[in-house]
Length: 402
Length: 145
Image (cartoon, rainbow over all chains, first blue to last red; front, side):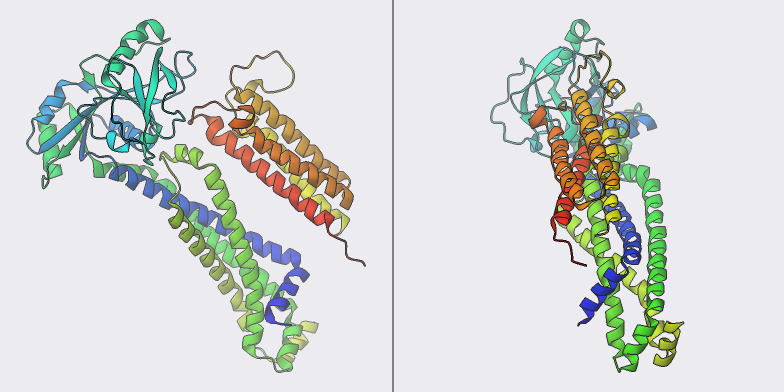
């Protein structure tokens, strides 16, 4: 009979105690894996959004609340609407160091209205100027639909396909193309060419339950690219001096602002993981100490018969290893199942488009954390084992009979 | 296996049934959740209403199956309940698929798409796994004492 079979027999014999230890370890593993995946996934999602903005600077109307709304719209596609005069586009374009500018106009659809499909973020774009959407078109559009037709480009998560029709504010649009998945708010956004947007606004007075009011000389945000070597902070200051009613947002600050909003949630979650780690370790130690105390007589006999100390330690460690490995794998599996199932709900709650890291990173994290949970549990159960093997065999046998 | 041990999967099935029933009503309520039920003359305008009705029915059946095993914790009952749970779990998953009964609207942001649907699939999957486990354990030859 080898150490593994003795360990398995002991687990079966003390099933309830093994289950108790397993519950503690699996709970810790589940929370640790869940929180870590969320922290890493949310950070990756924010980084992805910043990398894929396509613009160095963005200009929106002044106001802290508007900056937050704009940030959320970029990261999650949460609908928002604010406006600034179109004349600002030319003023900004004329600034030294600016190479490209593109204007976007924002609107949000009505909910539960027969004129409209769902609650979407509508973005009016100018085809000739735009550099933010076209790199994400699923298939290269060799010919664009004529501008006198009403068409839209939709994000990957809108659940519409090319050729389908959709109605906003009483105007029926044909889906011309679907963007490739971006992992940003663009996945949840509907892009409408500016001429079609204007027609939709004009018709909404007659066709929609609530008309949409956007003046022809209004836009919402200006995306711009700076030339190579241009100091972005200096350029932002110059723009804010030139157009005082606007604020400039650096693409890098989008990530900082989003992380700042999630910081408290993340700190609390990590504190909970730390507390659970302590509790699970303590529970494993106490339960295993009890198990070892009950087997003092048996272990004393082993030692009296001349069994090596490392054999006894190995046998007990293997028992702890089997329980903690099974428990941590089960806990991690449960956490992954829950997060994968509710990833979109979590994304909405945390205000990011994706909450899971990429598959290789996820696999590495889960395996690493399972190993960490296992090692923690084994180390905690090792203390009573080492204390026992140091005692005299006779005392151990006598103690076991008490 | 001792008779009382069959109560444990019965209890789990009862809990699972309650979870499936409550999902569209209270846990992740669908848009027309306040009208769910079998009486009244409510005329639904949204497809998710029928998914909610199906979930209440199927969840109720899962709970009754669990209750049966709780009241009669025997190997033969466990086998029958296991088969039923397997079928009911599959039915819950199928009901949440748009391709089968067209149960949810196309708007990706709606609560039923991001909450109700994954919760029902999770509940259905766990019910099916529990059923499979029951069939497996109850079909094993008992050890002679």
